[in-house]
Length: 375
Image (cartoon, rainbow, N blue to C red):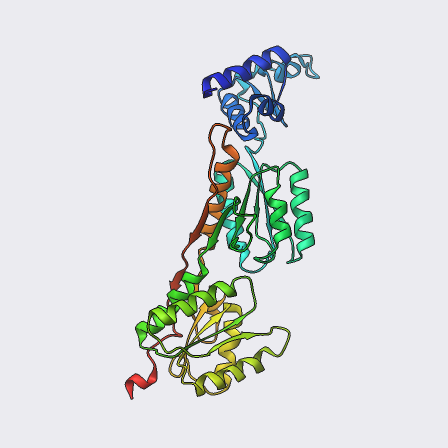
């Protein structure tokens, strides 16, 4: 059924029944509810029907009571044509749900990109927060489905929330996984996915160190869902650029004394001849720089530092060169991918898509050539 036929059928049903439910019409026609709502919006803009919550009614029915009303002075109001169109609150063309672990760090920019794209398309975005709690995460997903969202964007608490991935595979609405890997989720490969190529981000950082002349580089990081990808990229870059293969990667336990662990790492790294360190995340990198300066090191004179992520890197005691994930782009692309899935018809079968976006390097004052090059 093409556009003209579809909209003609809508107008015929309105004339026959006096109202139309977008959801019911979509199910009977075998098309998406979003397609129906788009048709209703176009027909309403042309003055051929009046939109109401959940569907539409004929224009004559919508204004009948208004035209036959009598004012207190006993006069009928002027015809609608002389008053201009009645203000109508536009119903969103679609509603997407977005479940994220943390509303305060890393994810706000992704959500902003998603909101911007959704609003540009005439839709609405509903946010759910899991606080890195897998049970709460699954409950949020279920509630959104029950409330009738047209599609879901989901960032799971970790990369191995297989129960959550199973729930998403069985979801009655389309799903796009955001900023997570499905590499180990063997049953979730059919899900669409958009994420940052964090391994490539680590390569970007180590490449800069190599270009500046550093031969011995280290990495210090927190345990996060991003860390394994960064470690893969770090190891790959060290080999690719022919740098010295040192045992200079440290995972900091955030439950212990972070400053003390950082200083202990610095002592071991400097003893091994490390002249540059890649630090994840930039929030920790701010503390790492403070610890380094407290030991009497100069940055970048004695030690070059690159942070991964660029939320607060510029605010460190020495503004940090940083590799920044393209967060707004991730949100923007994820919405477009979900929209494609939601608006697909039974005749248009889409294969699952896994898309990765490359991070960007932002140079600042924390990187330079190793001091030994000038001695």
